[in-house]
Image (cartoon, rainbow, N blue to C red; front, side, top):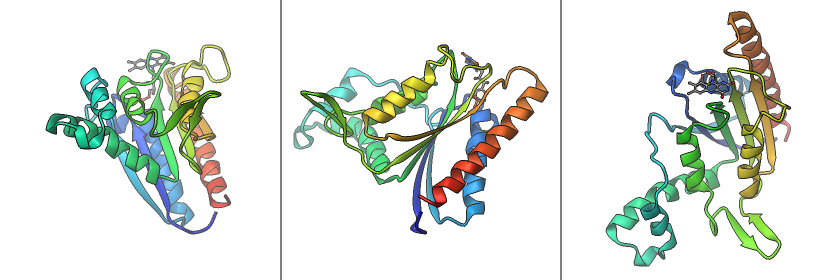
Length: 209
Ligand SMILES: Cc1cc2nc3c(=O)[nH]c(=O)nc-3n(C[C@H](O)[C@H](O)[C@H](O)COP(=O)(O)O)c2cc1C
């Protein structure tokens, strides 16, 4: 990869804030990127701290109303998603620090995806099915899990993330898993160390793209 500055958008959503395992993985990523010498800019949203609400009908209607016809209230409602979209469009790399909660994503993280998966903005429907409108972006998912699911049918989170990212056209996807984090201190430490090494490899690979 050239030394042009990498624009990184990080979204996290641990209920344990910066004590969460997914945040530890995100910190490892940022440290590895800093150590690499690659110039980068980072935008980070802690979606729990931000208390991101569920998407509701009024907000969706605001998007569906042409910008010049929106009421003052609709302009305010649409600004949240429009802001997230602008950040995502500007990003070269989306990093998703993803806790596994009840076999899925934290609700606040789903609420972020609900605001960037917008027909006509990040994908469009065609006769042949949906087509992603974002191009040339990479995604790195840093998944933190209490149990062991990767590569099994029980892992419903990975296909969900792959599909959502793919729908927007982000097909260059990379996943790092730290699993077994609730299975005792030793397995947890080993898993986090393994994930940290995998993250360092991902950052190294970024250098040569
Ligand atoms: C509300 C809640 C639900 C959870 N559900 C699962 C689960 O379905 N499967 C699992 O393996 N671990 C589950 N865990 C454990 C988390 O995956 C584990 O704590 C992981 O570290 C979460 O990332 P975090 O520490 O960044 O929050 C759950 C934890 C919480 C708090």
